[in-house]
Image 1 (cartoon, rainbow, N blue to C red):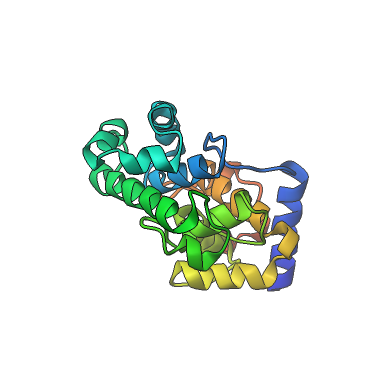
Image 2 (cartoon, rainbow, N blue to C red; image 1 turned 90 degrees about the vertical axis):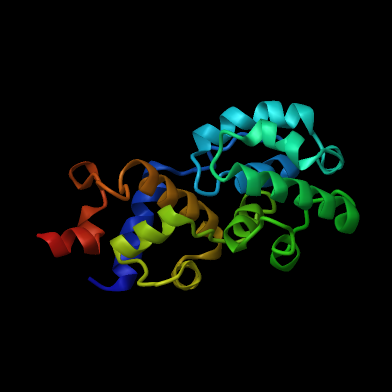
Length: 211
């Protein structure tokens, strides 16, 4: 099977079965989703969605969050992973939004990654989800599934991102991020991939290597 055939089969399946994938994080504006994505690092979306309603009521704007103390923010996010560092990131990110960007979430990779707590993955989520740009965010799920399927053979998230970008049309790139992520979350799990109930085994390099 060629790499072109593998991509065609996988993408056709996802387009047919999940034409409009989206994030499972709950948000109402760019600032809220930026906060939610920062909180979601190494944490489930379910847990983040439990935390953010009260957090957003207390600090609905970058100005409000920047004016709060780190300890105050920590009280709202203490049930997520790495709460101390994330509370600090949220405070510092909000302060930088206010001081350097007029309280507006920026729309470029360079400016987004200048914000505390925002790496390339988070920036790509923002670029695709909020600004409609052709971005592929590679988190642990996307990294794992892309390598297992044989869509990429990268040793780093950036290598996987570059390979996926090269093979996926711009208009499908952010959808592909969601498709691969959700497949990793619910089917192609890290410890026990559910190959018996996976519809992608025909195109999966990992599965074929076990046969």
